[in-house]
Length: 68
Image 1 (cartoon, rainbow, N blue to C red):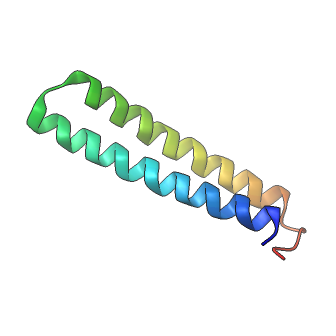
Image 2: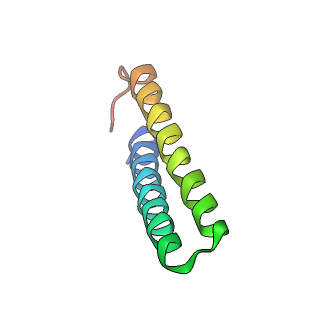
């Protein structure tokens, strides 16, 4: 597996985990009323958006490099 393929898989998994954690934290805030969970959820969702933007620029920059 090339470094580009590994990086791509790692970024996608990071986006998915961060998004799921953010949704879980925001939903869990509704039942626990802990402000820290809401803050962590929002930060995680913002991080998911930032990583998605990074993924777009990464793919654009390295489109000529092979996945192998």
